[in-house]
Amino acid sequence: MDDCPQQSCFVPDTGCALGHVDLSVCPVYHGSGKDTSVPEPTGDVLLPWSGSALGLADLAFVAGRARPRVIATIGPQNAGKTTMLGAWYLLLGRGAAHLDAGQFAGSFSLAGWEAVAESLRWTPGQAPGFPPHTASRSGRAPGLLHLSFRAGQKQPTDYLFTDAPGEWFQKWAINKDGPEAAGARWLAEHADVFLLVADREALSGTSMGSARSALQLLAARVADERKSRPVALVWTKSDIPIAPAMEESVRESVFVPMPEAKEFSVSVTPGDTGERQTDGALPKLLDWALTTRRPRAVLPSTPPVSGDPLFMYGAISA
Image (cartoon, rainbow, N blue to C red; front, side, top):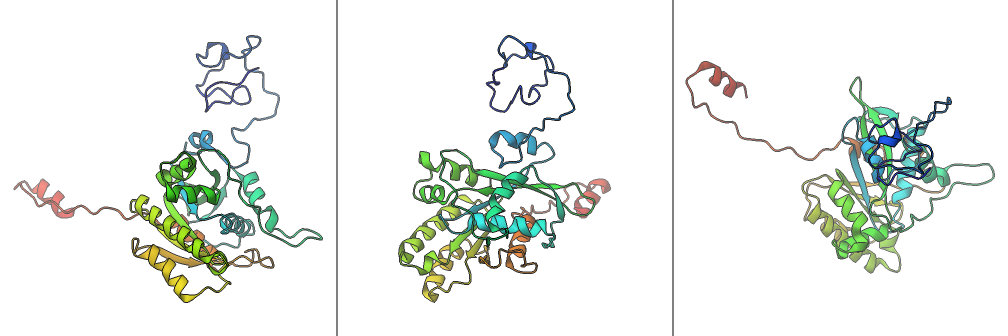
């Protein structure tokens, strides 16, 4: 049978997105003309997700409970963005991250998380390494890794962590409206939290000048697009020293236009892939990303304009 032409429907692998049991009456799906009925249950349940990183077509399913919060990790290529995601996943898997956001309550993308963290694990005869470079694909949205957390008896809160190639952000910083910046542009529109990654290794190497210029340009773009959303400057590979003047220059490019931004320093080495950092910077950064919110507007109180005690009571109590 042919696939449904509707982008968010995956008939016949899953049920009809419009709810039709008899596919012959569906105005969108036409199939092969041979069999338009839904097969009888065989005991195997087809889930509406594969476990891999989610795409735009999966967002409607994830957002069925409530709008998920999007945590955007932004930075140049090879800055350690994917490694940081993998280290977080290993911490959660070992129950080593004690978070104010609550306890782990599930994920629709466990296979995607495993693909990110696979290189960081100890395996027989092989020491852990780092994840491969995230390929610069032609998609218009990044890979989205899902996690859910529950605080006490409250409803779980869903989060989507982005895993996007650094090339997207470099092109977005230069020209936000360019066709090659579509993925980064999607992030700028939908993110709830921005983690701006500064690679200390690049800022201390032979190309430190160009690395600083690229990061300053990216910080300026984030400041222009964030619209009061929380931002954190995240120094990766923090065990590598850089010149004080270089560090101050990067801080200035971030904190001058965004004085309320936070600052974190994290490091994941081949001998310690984050799994032992139970009280270190990695859990603190994750907890901040999960719990921070943009500031709320405070409206001035309205003075009473009536002598009616009921209206006066409402104005006073407000």
